[in-house]
Each structure stands twice: as C-alpha cells, then as structure tokens.
Image (cartoon, rainbow, N blue to C red; front, side, top):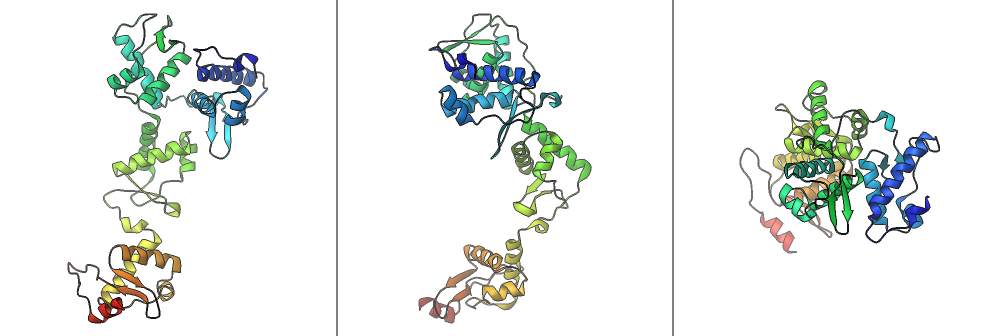
Length: 336
C-alpha cells in the first residue's frame, strides 16, 4: 500500500483520502492486469489494521467504492472488484445520488460561486427534507467529485463546473420495483409465484437486498403477497385467493377449527397431537403450532397432569354464531 495513505493531515478527511487512493489503485491494477474482475479484496478489518484507522472508517470507504461502482459486497463472502465493462447503461439512482443532485440544485438556485461556503449538514437536511446521514454522504460524494472542498469544519464550492440533474429521478429500489411490476404484468397471473430473489437479482443486475426491498414496496402497494420459505412471493389481483398460499400450520389450524365446530362443545377434550397429526396427515410439530395459535385466540386451553390435554374453551364462529357456554364438567376439571 502506498506510504502516503498512512499519514493524514489534521483537517484531512481520512475516508475521502483512502477512498480516492483505492479507486485509483483498482483502476490502475485492472488496466495492468495485476488484478481481475471478481477478485476478492482484503477484509475491511485487515485494511483498517494496516492503515491504522478504525473499522468504521473502512466501512465508509467501502460504501463509497460500492456507490461508485468499483466493488460489490456479498454477505459471508466479502467484497470483490466489479467488472466495470459490463455496468448497466441505465442509471439506477441511490438516495445519496438524489441528495447530491438536490444539493447541486440548491447551490445553482442560490447562485453559489467559487469559494462560497455551503450551509451546514443540519440546515441542508431541514431545507431539503433529506436525512442528515444521506446529506452527509452526498456532501462526501461532492468532495470526491471535486465540486466541494473541505476547509476545517466547512465545505467550500471549488471552481469546478457542475450540472444539476433531474432531482425527480427514481431510487434504485423504486426503479427495480417498476421493473418487477412490468415483469409480473407480462409473465404472471394472479396466484402465481414470483421467481426467487436471486434469479430476479441476476435478471435486473442488482443485489438480492435491492430485490427484497423492491418486493416489500410492491407488497405495501398490494401487488405482491410475500411469504416465508417455500411459499415464496405470490402475485395478487382481484381473483387472488389468499388461502391458496397459507402456511401449513394455518391450513391445519382451519381444519382443527372445522373439527371443533362439527364435533365439540365447550369443555370437550380434543384428540391428542399425535392423533391429529395422523388424522390430518401432517407433522406433530405443525399440529402443535396450530393449537398454540388457537390457544392464543382463546379457542382451546392446555392442562397438564393425569387428566390433562387440550380442551375447548370457545367454539369458532360458524354462520354468525358462537357457542360460549362453559360446561360444569370443564369448570370442575379446571378448578382441580
């Protein structure tokens, strides 16, 4: 590592200096074929220890490199060099990018000239309605671009020209949400499952986390119905039947409710978990979870001991009526 990276001036921003050096190093190393796309970088902790900075500083450095498109991080694997030749042509905007353009527009609208001091991060956040953390990241980005220069605790506009882009541009998550929506419209029907997140990530050239965030956004809009594990994410329309994607324990819960309605009265003892599992052709664990839910809803209760078991405390609603009478036998057993 270059010696100059190890020393920092009193008012110098460590994050910016290290990020600039790493960008230059990756660019030169790729051209000279010293490294190749998809080579793993040393861990943040290793570089932080080597340079003598905190892990938090290196995390910020790696975040800048990711935002700039030089590296990509994968959970439990590490950070690797991206192949910039195959970067998507379409601009997918992050919150930081949007905030960067918001600040540019603010400076342009207020006739900032070279040497003018930018408002504090707190004031910019209040004026623009963008969080302080995002404004701070955007200001760092402008310093990296040479548009701003840090002087002690202030940021001054340099003589470098800049252009304020459309601040209405969509964030990456919003853009991928639109892409998924279009994919659903052209390829899927109500009740059908969305492809796995990893497949969508490859399809749209984004991270799995971005896909997850996009699916959350579409779930809030009511287009998708996300479920855990093998149930996946289902397309929702007017014909959508939620029961078609119920978890196993929810299906068993409904069947036990039906059993109670047809065969029981309040105070009756239900069949054992083993008997229910055999009767309903499912696992004992699934029956136990279903019964736990029914107990939480107040339909059954559990009693220990020689005469214990699962007892009906209330009858689920059937055609608008609920049987809430409690038999004297049940009260006597409960008291004992």
